[in-house]
Amino acid sequence: MASPRVNLAVLLVAVLAACQLGRPPVGGPFQVGAVRVAAPEPGLGDALSSGLAGALARRGGLGAGPHVALRVLAAEEGVRAAGEGARVHQVTLRVEAVVSGARPRRLVWSGSRDYGASGLDPLADAQARADAWGRISARAGDEIAAWLLYAPSEAP
Image 1 (cartoon, helix red, strand yellow):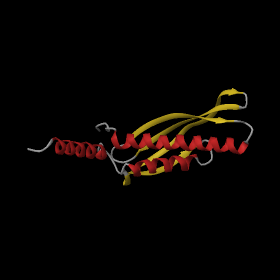
Image 2: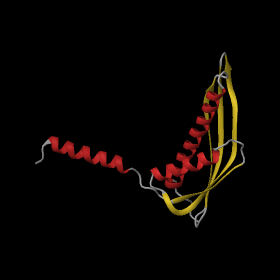
Image 3: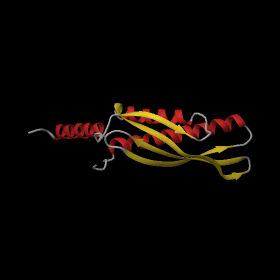
Image 4: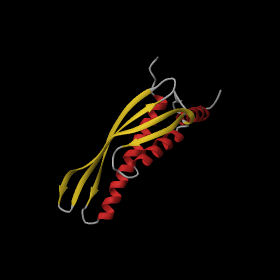
């Protein structure tokens, strides 16, 4: 009969292995296709493409497969609050992801992110704005990749 320490060690190894394995993807692999951006935000298309490619690569879902085309439906920026010496801005992004191939699918993703701007240093404010667009693009890539890999697709 095994000792309680051995039983606990075996249980701990089994739990840790299960945590590392995670849920296997339902679909994949995918290729990042064209990114269409009608918004005047510089670098937004590249940020969306690299965000999706990075998220798919981290999950093992990047490879030769159906193309995922992204289209920016809206990219807006505005002031949410203003006070003495500081303003809170918000960037809002709405993206359509379309999967081509034998089982086409479509998702419309939207999200927003706040950032602060002092109004005193234009370079720092521009960097904060660019960081906000980069982070919202990375979050869009993560959530779209999760949808691609783990969401069940409808039967034809």
